[in-house]
Length: 481
Image 1 (cartoon, one colour):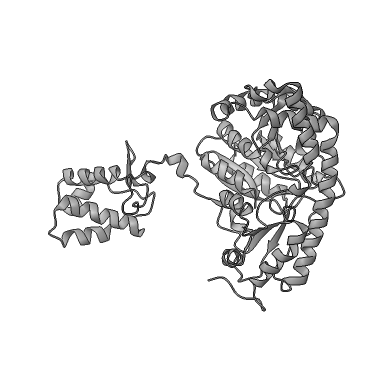
Image 2 (tube, helix red, strand yellow; image 1 turned 180 degrees about the horizontal axis):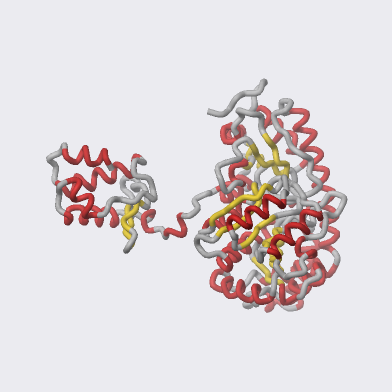
């Protein structure tokens, strides 16, 4: 504001228009960034030796342009940069404050890159969709449409079709009334955030952790604190519980996204014990749990839970195909009922036809057959990608641990090599990955990146890694600024 005051006193232009122009320029240049609080009208008027009416008029003009927003009892704040010349209406300044809590477009970019035929995408968390059981799925769809077509096209229960809820309940050993069907696990995270989090609540999440969870909880106004999932130190977790008194713990303990790690059963029991002692619920993201290569993982937190404090989130997107948009939550019936009330406002019911088809696949055994197929396929693709990295990438340029399941390699770059700079080079070369910084709620991760080995055809894995390797150069190029 000091530069505005200096410029203001040196001009003989009309006061109102000059103040509007100076404030607009300061907002556009970043001198007054979004979120900045402007001086009270009376205070600024005294500083500039002008009438308060002039300042009020200038503030109101900038509010009308969508650049400022006034709040009773709080003051006037910058809420947007100026729109480009010729824009008919300043929509950016009309966006709700809650919508501005997160502006990270990484999820959207991942999906866009995966559907871009010009790119080889190592970014999207997809299973081997070329192994999707097309014939079995077509038979299941045809069966529904042949025997009871009206059930597919009418409204369905918000909680989900009983056939699918019961199939899930039988498979995972939970009561059917504790199951809620979702339009994908991401919807589940958004619903849980809406249901459980008030602005200002603390939430403990994996560090690094799933970027969709970070975005959903942040959008709900949560204060996010990371627990180092790789170390799995429960003393650290207890310290965080004591210090922050969180509303909930979110963790993805099996074939973790993005690191691929799996917490041992000892740590799982300790996490549950702490959650029970401090009366903090756990959201267990189990979307990768069925994707082991050979040995099944330890029991889930839900299976070990004897205090009914675990909300279990799962999805068919990672084991069948993301295009199904089908997931589910298992929780106490009271929570399921509350989430269903919230869900009905956004999505009255998940598409019926897909629910009936997947329920039939589970009942006919085709789902288990498909799981066996993709477990073997993913293990092969993981091995092939690791071999390609060893063959093409400069020695030491990508360091990682081989996972025992899941979809990802979590890679660390050498000191001085920036993932963001490598990302720009890789996109220009026609290959995409996810930068590590997207998986942190705090500034971190620019020396890390995530590669998805499962969603790339075997015929394209070597080419993808060869292109990525070329971005390092013939020697270890320092990419950071």
